[in-house]
Image 1: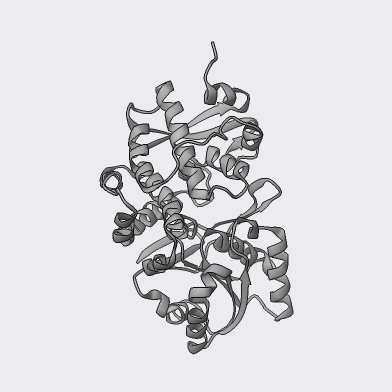
Image 2 (image 1 turned 30 degrees about the vertical axis):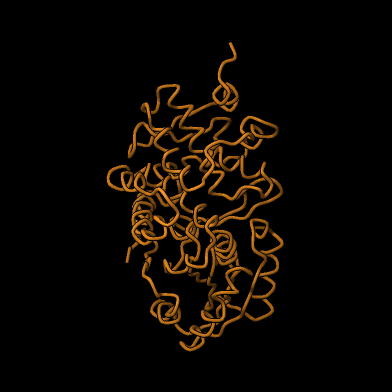
Length: 355
């Protein structure tokens, strides 16, 4: 169990194999009996919705189901309107709650809905993907997309509980698992030390599966410490965006052909390469990232970088402050730094001086 303590909120992150069979008991520890909107997607629901709903009912909760299409397109105003409509029709009040049963898309969408319905009702994350378990379920950032802009509408809204059962990963495809592993490598690079060394030993997908609980625990503990130091991303929390400025642009330009973690992997390697070239990053670090990402099938390059709308997408990055991007560089493993770059200078930074 990992505890997050913030000025106005504290909650537990429970990480344990088998918790999927005891969701109702876990929820009952933090909530009184109430009506619950259980939000999931079609892929996750096929495996776990009935089990979760039945367990909640056995523990005295009234379950209202909401199963959405799987995929990034679900993070939309249309989905929000649908979910708010269901809640209003079913008579949800501020004394009721929302539970996200799924990966990052479901967690983001459900958290956003919980934060705006009647100006905020109780919310719990049950993270079923590796991406959600190591990153997106922790810290209270919730967002939806609009047009070609990722996470442009969002809130900071902390859950009352996060439940992580590594056994959920058994029904995750290798590609979906490896996507989440990109966030593990990112966190290990930020943390340095034994965690960084450990990801250097992961050479196969089987290695990731065999060591999933330890990798999850290390990732969550690092992020929890960052969130407790900077809940609203005013300072040190910005380092968690390592690889994401380029990654989000690549992801949008790929139009669904790349998963989030795949785009972030290419983004990490690209920005590390440029900072290593410029002397901000120690020599050899980019190769060390490639050695952790490539063997398990993650892309380390994207032909979309620098093409088409790439630089236009950078303008919508949330680290853009009056035309200046706050990029994350690694001086060395465990030593992230913020490097400011003018938007006008990004083309030269990415592509180099042709002269």
